[in-house]
Length: 277
Image (cartoon, helix red, strand yellow):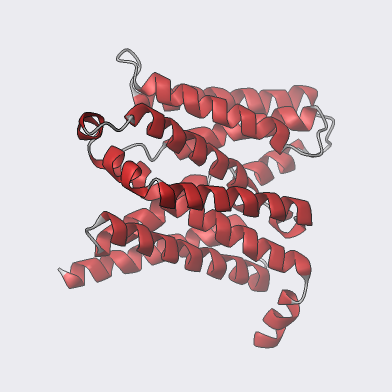
């Protein structure tokens, strides 16, 4: 097995997949803690459906770089979700349900009506659940992912105190002079970027797992925000790395394998937390 793993690691596309997978897992876990604590974790699920709609439009337009369409659409919808969530007539969960279901339905409709592909079902399944596209990344795509991931991590570190304040008590943050709306908007935009990056890794329907499971696992063992964030990031990276390597060796779907490892890690942390108590 070690010889086989060494052979696979000698191929550049495998190394690219590992680099992108680890970076996406890191970024997802950092924002995941905030989203879970703010009871807004399903924004990832909603935006992933929006991204699916963007992919459908890009496929119909035969764009080689789908991110030119998918990223702006997802960011705009993230802002709309945030604004709608603050509307007293449309609560946050209702806004997410409306936008996600509409995007999913229209995306599938567009792919059926306008797509020239002879394998629509395969294209839809790959987009929703991930595919081997993570193993066909180019240097340009890897570089773009690295740049965006570094931006996300740097912003999180620089704005850590502000994000911490907004996460736990927005009213106190406002009294302290922090513009909570601005930081909520920044969080929504960053999670939109992460969603778009993660689509090649786990697919549109499984992205929420990258955001939620590491954070929930860390919360079973730690109480402080800093400890939860650090452990969540480390666990997410380990699970992503293990999932990618297992999928390569066993020939299983990359996204589903990573999520399965995340679920297993959550169960281990759950029992460890109960034993600790």
